[in-house]
Length: 404
Image (cartoon, rainbow, N blue to C red; front, side, top):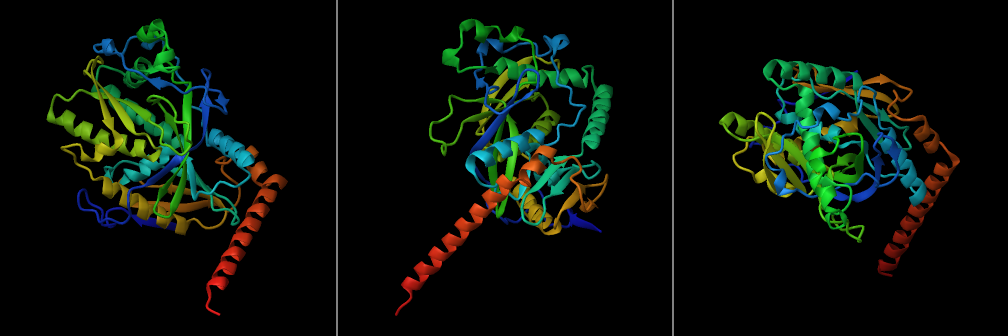
């Protein structure tokens, strides 16, 4: 049976959505992982980079070095493997099960939150959900890899017909901007050569630092992992203090109303991507249409919903996501593999079960073995004992407060 969540009839309109819930609450990063220069997983922060923009780079050709681009091959599905490894490591260290309703990449939630503004003819995200057995509240969501690659091919074909620069070149511009604006160590520790030689550095998108955090949307707790472009300053010693993360973006310099409309739509995605994982700043590199860096503007994520003029409403995005996730939690019951999709031109988001058993490669064998291990069972038993003791203590306290 297919369950349907109506988009057009849900009452959400740009500027006219009703408030259902406050803005999402972001908890601090509780774990992280890296990919090294060969895109190999590392359970550490070794690929963290620091933000520093050299004003001398204004006017730089963002196409320079394209022929040497060390590009990660994304034709193979990564699944949630790295995130699951990180959860295993955290549960072993902390001695408790991760408490989250949904576990996924930040990019998946970005697609959910901007769904209410999407053009209806666009085929939307087609993730697969793996629901663990009834003794766990975790649902794991990942994007359908075949669909993502086909959508990418179609988008690139359209871009090739529109302009003189290939989609690969325009994608490279963003990574080139990241190379120009980041350092592998804090600015105070970097040499002048390291800072000034960045325009000649080989551009690569293989090394990544990924932050893992809990974000609350109403009663829904989401464990989200997302790539962090850079750190502003340094990480605070207090683990509960906010981290000044930086998101780096490029966009065409605004020369016309069409450019302005395009930028306004991008700002919405900048905002969604950033607040989901606790990124406090967005640094935008404005480029000319032939790929030269024109100017750099630093923005605070909290201020993006107030950028004028705009054709989107942050509250509408949040309310839509809140109601959709509450509906989704009610639909996904029991184990098995599920699929979420929105057909081209469709007015509903559909959810249906693919199979009652298995995990559809969403969960790794390592993760399944860990969750079924004696060590995990012992952790769950200890958690149950603590909960029972806390309940007994509360009952005893209430009994003492009763008048004799």
